[in-house]
Amino acid sequence: MAGTRLCASRATGSWSNCRTACCRDTERRRTATTTWADVIMPDVKHVGGFGPLLGVMNASAGAVEVSPHNPAGPVSTAASLHAAVIHPDVVRTLEYAFDRKQTRRATGERVEGGMLLLSDKPGWGVEPPA
Image (tube, rainbow, N blue to C red):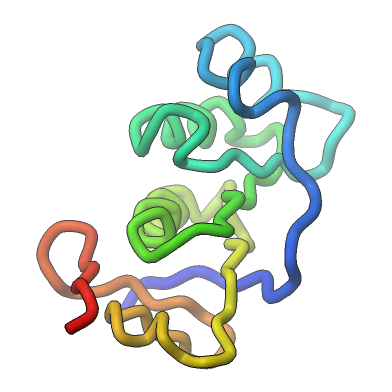
């Protein structure tokens, strides 16, 4: 089963004005190929969705590592994970907001051996809690 390595820390880094700049193709491309950062952290919610997140990763290939900024819930996690699995050469670490109360497991997220596993369920693979 496919998955990606997790970053267990609470990330404080983000990238250049992610709410506005990276939503424009030219700014996204410039940020994704930067030489002033080792890792950029686009957030699927702020870059405009799954397609634009893939665009950031496509532009980043060979230039800079991408670690999706992922402090939100299961749908954002699923979208970020799917993008990470599509681009394993660009994404080595996925930020993951661990829940000490284990309520995130109710949505079907599975962590094994430090890897967040891709669901085999249809669509994003997210099941709403009962």
